[in-house]
Every structure is written in structure tokens, then in C-alpha cells.
Image (cartoon, rainbow, N blue to C red; front, side, top):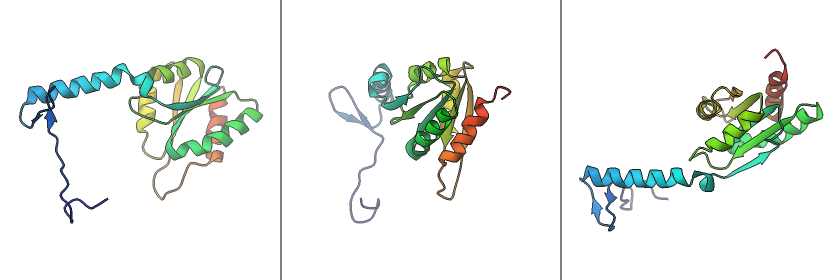
Length: 167
């Protein structure tokens, strides 16, 4: 892909169009109507748009909500946790918007705790916390910088700690 401004003209615009496809750049009402219509369309079909992989979300003590490359650690960590007798389930989000509120709420109703591994400062854990709304304790597992991934061992340690009754 060319760098913007070097060699090719690349149109970058925030303009929108009306219901006839005619482009407007200055009519705020037309822009607002279009953005609201598109946003509502996405909200109304969020369950159809959202994509995920789930495991044991109906019967788990500890739940995990992951996405992206952090998901690689869940498979081994869950296998080892279950070998230790800890009922563990996960939701691996393949899309993060629209956020799958109903799915996360379903997990929160079953799990005591939900671990959210992320390679950032916890943006998705805030969304999980919002949706869980106190039904389950949300435990972030954050790692930042250096290109270092969350390992299955780190996730397993968090699962084991979360499974302790006094936590």
C-alpha cells in the first residue's frame, strides 16, 4: 500500500451521502442520519455479526475472555487447569465490535471469575466488567511492550489464583 502523499492520490474524507447516494460534505443532519442508521443496523444484527469460539461456558468456575494473539495461551492453560480439577471455560473473540454483550453476560452468570488476558492496559476487561455487572469478578491479565506474549504458564497461574476460595 502506498504511503499517503507519496506517488498516488489517496482520497481520505469524512463526507457522507444521502439516501440517494449523493455525496454531501456540509450537511450535518444528513451525516447524523446516516451514521445513526448504520450504527443501529450494526446494533440490531450484533449477534449475527459477532464471531467467537467458545468452550465450556455453560459449566465453568473460571471463565476466560480473550482475543487476538493472547488466545494462543488459553488452550494449554485450560487443559492444565482442568487436569487439576478446575472447571474452566473460554470465549475467544474473533470480532470485538460490536461487543457480544449477551454472550459475555451468559459467561458471567455461570463463572465465579472471568480472566481477561490482554496485551494492553485492559480495554476489553473494562467492557467485560461493564457487561458482567457484578455477576462475576473480572480479573485483568495485562502485559505491555517488548513484543512478549502472555504465556500459558502465566495464564494458568492466574487461573489457579482465581480458583482459590479466598480470592
